[in-house]
Image (cartoon, rainbow, N blue to C red):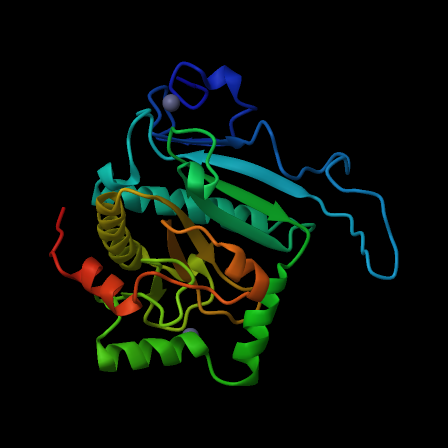
Amino acid sequence: MIVFFCPGNEDSTPKEITRWPNQQDWQIRVFPNKYPVIDNKNQKHTRGENSKFINRKKIKGVHEIIVESREHNAQMSDLGLHYLKQVLVIYFERLKKLKQQDSIKYVAIFKNHGERAGASLKHTHTQIVAYSKIPAVIQAKEQVCKQRSCGYCEIIKYEKKHQKRVGFENQNFIAITPFAAKYAYEIWILPKKHLVDFAQFNQEMLIDLAAIMHKIFKKITQLNCDYNMIFQYGVKDLHVQIIFTPRIDNFAGFEIATGTIINSVFPEEAAYFYAKDNISF
Ligand SMILES: [Zn+2]
Ligand SMILES: [Zn+2]
């Protein structure tokens, strides 16, 4: 068993950034990744080539780990409502802090759960990669929303009216299984209001978000599969969202050859799966 993230092994991680609560028996702990994909020191991870078609850019940044529980075997679905809210507070505090750094252009927050989703350690954790580049996918999405009204606000309006792809809904948030989902059982949580910064979430919204996340974690546990969770925001005016991608199918030759994705589960079936039991705490 690999115990780097367990209590008693704090010395095996780089110097801690923060913990909650601030006492010996921590529940949530944040520290730099010992094996960062990116750092501020040297460029050993990039290759030195330049040509008409090969573009080399220097990128700097930081790579952090947030361990959400001191229990080695705890899953996100085991965390209670107020605990999960505290986890969100820590995610968004780190996001805010890192965004303030001059060299940082984007802060990616994501969870890889299980080997198929890219995780190498079992102890639950979320990663933050903050770096000096705005991802092309974010730029493209912002461009589309700039040309017309916010696509996500329109999707929310449409899905609320038709109710075929709504998994969960409460006062402040809606969770939908998107019409053209890339992944089987993919689900997005969106604030109903057009908000572009996670720092805009007030206490009531954090509780509402934690409530829907809890239900999604429970349902993904029922699917018994690996998954990714991604917190997406833009740099100008992109509607924030939390994306969950269960990893059931692999992309095969057809997807690689064409970029066309075959999804084995209709989003309407996925929405029914999420909505059918009324999960409570
Ligand atoms: Zn552990
Ligand atoms: Zn919007």
